[in-house]
Length: 297
Image 1 (spheres, rainbow, N blue to C red):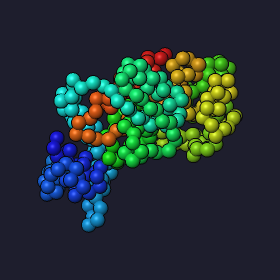
Image 2: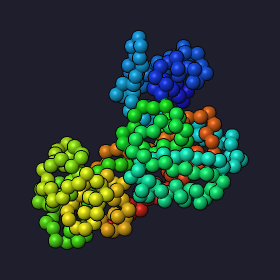
Image 3: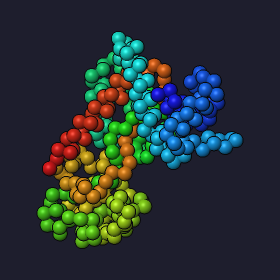
Image 4: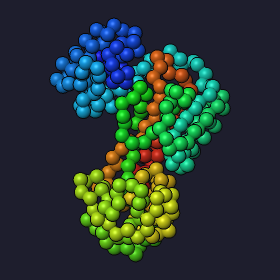
């Protein structure tokens, strides 16, 4: 695992020199460990020039997986060392506005109720916050994971969900495959690249018949609930309605999630108990919600 730890440090820090300083090791040791890992795997994980070091495509994919394992190992070691430490103090969390306005706020409130000695601050914003510079302990982010100095744990799949209300489906034409979407009234966000064609992740853009358009996901959700048509929306905006049966998820085996939802935090030699407890709380909460969603008929 020490070779993987060295590789993760190089990607996060952007150079062998910075990685060596972070790990408190000689630069030659870090370089030797990464080279040994590449030889063991039989691939080039890093593209090196005289000025920069960056992950190759295979290196980025490997980093996305192994950095979680390295982070979990550090957390496990810290957990044993700090298992008797009280969970208390200030905890600052940042998240996208849409997540906070829906189910994430309930999860954070539940954590605050369970740990009254923790002062939780939930800051909602649609910009990408600099966690370290702005003094946050935890960031919740959606989308494809980019290399960063933060440890990331995947909470759930994320991506577009095709859905409609039971009232609309009761009178609409059949929708058993993506090729039939052109026979349906569609609710369109005119601010995204989908436009008059929807891509369901199958490599094909399917022509649609717009019935109602808006630049607001909230308005489009209300339009779907009102039975105006079929919506292709980020799952965060409709997951609660689907769980409650107010909307029906369509073609779940054909419309696949393409991104992830992540909890991210600053790596420390000893992760604070409050951060570890909060991250574990979110992982359990999202796992429970995912199980409930899969159980829906």
